[in-house]
Amino acid sequence: MPTNPTNWYCDVCGDQIATAEDGYVIWKVDEQHLDHGFLVVHNGKCDNGQYPSSIALPELVGPDGLSHLMAFLSHGPLRANPDHPTKPRVANIDQFVDLVRRLHVPHYEEARGHFGNGGVRDAMSDANEYYPYIGKVMQKIAVGEYDD
Ligand SMILES: [Zn+2]
Image 1: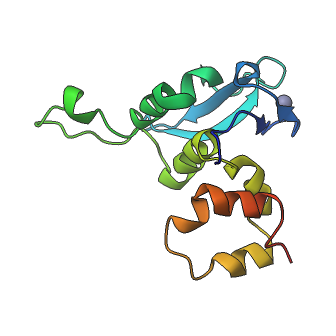
Image 2: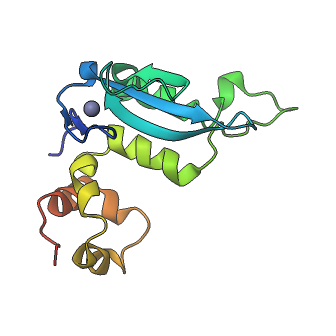
């Protein structure tokens, strides 16, 4: 059974981030106060100070981490104000969901490096919206099973 991700590839240096404790998520905020440009980086050495916002990676993994990430999109029923419906805090939903999948979908991080491969794109061209991202498919993509 696929397990939750426990290591990542740094968006700055490309080396592996071996544990959540070694990582940070950093991002920028645009003029409309929307978050964007999310990166997963090594804590310290690869946080170049160009990104004003950050959260330690352990705070965004596991069940509580998923709850934290979902708060970027919705205040949820306990914090909702019917007079002021929640607006997502993110500028680009696809970019944000990529981050959520990197942190929560088994094998997504390793599979990401194969997404541009023609064989992978052909194999997934008829899939529904979620099938490519389920664990067993991500695992096959990650090991290059569909690569041409
Ligand atoms: Zn790094």
